Structures are given as C-alpha cells and as structure tokens.
Image 1 (cartoon, rainbow, N blue to C red):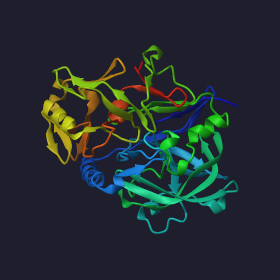
Image 2 (spheres, helix red, strand yellow):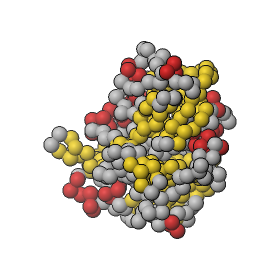
Image 3 (cartoon, helix red, strand yellow):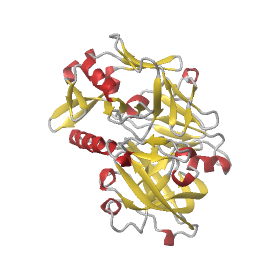
Image 4 (spheres, rainbow, N blue to C red):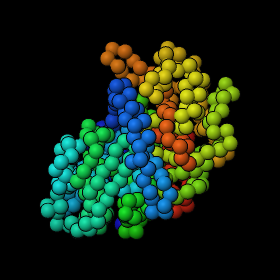
Length: 386
C-alpha cells in the first residue's frame, strides 16, 4: 500500500498521528573547539588526492565534510538491527559498519551489522570504497531488507564497512550514511534506497521534502518521503529550480548579495543543497570577503563576530532562478557556548579546493526554508515556512 512516510526530527518517543508515522531524529551539537579542529582537518583533506572521487560518468566530484546536524534511526535485516544514520543529500550510498570491521577504532564505537543473524541477508561481495572530504570508508556490498519507520524496502544493497578512517567517524554520533542523491554518483552504481521505495510502490511519488531547522534552533525538523507537509510550507512559495547536472542536487545560483551593495557569484555559479553539511561553503576569496563585510575576526578558517553586534549585521540574499532567498543575521550567525562565554560564528566557511561546484548550501541555508527534492522532474524547490 502506498503512503507518505514522515520522519520527524525531534527528541522524544515515536508516535503515530492520523496514519502518519513519526520517528525521532536527534540533533548533533558541536563545541567551538570541534569546529576549529574540524576546519583544520578539512583543509588538510581538501589539499589531498583523496578529496575527489570519480563517479560512473567519469566526472570528478567533491563531497564536503560530514559535519551534519541531524541523525535518525533505520534498521537492516530480519529481525531488525538498528542504526543511527545521517540522511545526506550530498551522497548516494547507504552504508553501516560491518561485524567484520575489526581494526578500525571508529567501528568499535558504533553499532555494526551482523549478516549471520539476518534471515533475509543476501551475499553480494563486491568491494566498495567511498572517499569524503574528511575521510573514507571501505568494505563490501551486501543485500538485505531495509526498514525506515514501518516501510520495508526489500533487497536493498548497501555497504558493509570494514574500514573507517578515524576522522570524522570515530566520535560521530551516527553509525552510517543514508544517501539521498542521484545514482550517477553512487559507488559501484548501487541503486539508492529512494529509487527502491518508488519501484516497490512504497511511496506515491519520487520526491522527498526536508525541513532542516537551523543548527542553532532548539526545535528539530522533518523529512518526508513521497510528499510535502502543507502545514509547514506556503505551497505557492515553492519555486521549482531546474538541476543543471544529475548527481548532487546541483543548480545555478544567480548571485549572493547584501543590502550594503556587496555581491559575490556575480555572474552565476554552481551550487548544491547538502543536508550533510552544517555551514554554507563557498570559494575562499568570496567567503573571506563576506567575513570582511561583516567585520569578522578570522581564525582557523572561521569568522567570529561580536555577539553584541549581531542584530546590526546586514541580511545576506541568495538569488536563485528569479527569486530571492534571504538570511537575516540571526539565521547565519551560530551562537556556541565556549565555557562561560558565548562564541558567535559566521555560518560560512571557505573552501580551499578548485572545482566546478563553487557553493554548498548546508544547514545554515536549508534551516530557513522548506526544501523539496524531485527525482522525477529533476528540480529542487525552496519554500517559505508558515
């Protein structure tokens, strides 16, 4: 039977209301020191050859650091084995640690999949390797039943990971990654879970929608497979933006500007929407100029401002497909506790790589809008929240 699957991002007990199934997803917080440490690791990783991986179409692509804000629960196998995963629009594979992961410390801190205990396990055996901006995972492919809430996706192929880099996975609050991008960037050409949900008629349409609350917000958000939540978004504010390449959720951004007259990406540039990235990532020269416009102090790649001046900072507007999407200063400034002090970080971070995806819009941007991802029409839409 077809229905819309609703995943609510909040800390609490799973409930069912009017036939809509809700499961808790949890918010991940980072201390200021972790931001600085993460940035230093990111700089080193971006300068290394492991930054890029080659998709099936031969195009080199980049996956930014996995400093994601939300994680939720899925299960694999029969009886179910439970895992916390990041729902990531910046990658396409599903993977979890394997019981065969003996030597990686990162595996020891997390739940791992035991194929011998699942009656629905099927062997695949192909080797898999996925490189990220801050690390990589290796292992082999297996097939089993995937359960998201009460939806059972049969014969889902996923990565059983036998080797994880220490960073960023060792202290991560999630066990694995649930990719939500297109098959063209999936390692080994594995079909992403959403495609199997559609082919098995578990959801009505090949869309999913996301309310990804700003990482400084106290409330969570939600992820819906197969529909949108009209109680949260002003429907006529959704403006379908055509994708200009199928892989990531990539589109043309017209410009970035402030009310002071400063502009970046003046002649248009590529951008992707990535739920697996906390901040807004942009070309180093542009982000440093944004820091300058905001009178930010720069340290380890981050910009910090005087918390008393936040309300006086200008809004930053992203022009996309003929519409403007504006972040007020409270939207793009992250207030983080550093002992007894509060640190106000600018939610932008400079990339040190040179490639065709020039901007990555992470949680700082996505937290302001309701986002609809459409696999069939190859569009992405940002809508105004009610």
